Image (cartoon, rainbow, N blue to C red; front, top):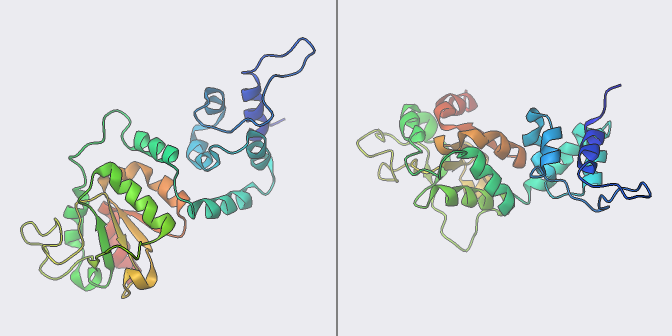
Length: 245
């Protein structure tokens, strides 16, 4: 008999609490699901850890019932849609930082891939995409800024400057940094992009180019914001070329 994951998790947590003399468990009725709980983490298959982050802080009994429900894929999809409108919590952001930079402090010598690879995107393609590069702030703050943009939208009370993803003659010296070449900033961790031939203010953010600092959390970003497509900077040329083919 195969033990379902929800039952397995519940029993794993239950082991952490002693049994009274009358045979009752001291496990709290309103216990929370958390991947920080070593008993839960040990019971969760490694390939499920990223998927289950969406249930962080939810009632343990509720999460266990969802996991064992025959309609789990549909329920998970609904949770993702609800979660995407809220964005990552501060606690979830800390988990993402640890995943992206597990052994060192957040580095400053990152985010070169967009500078290198977007120079190979033909202007007749890149010029059709309105973009905004998240730069001029620290790498950690760039993730926070992206989270705010995708969960709350663009703040209409603050300037939000956009530029083409690529323009003609943008491959000159220093053109990949800032907007000196007329295009969106490329030296930050993320570049948000709109629909072809539409301003971001008109179409909203539809694509996000993820620079090399955060390659390892692209799946987490995609799960949190399923309405947006996330693409690695080193794959951006092929991706945007296919969109217009």
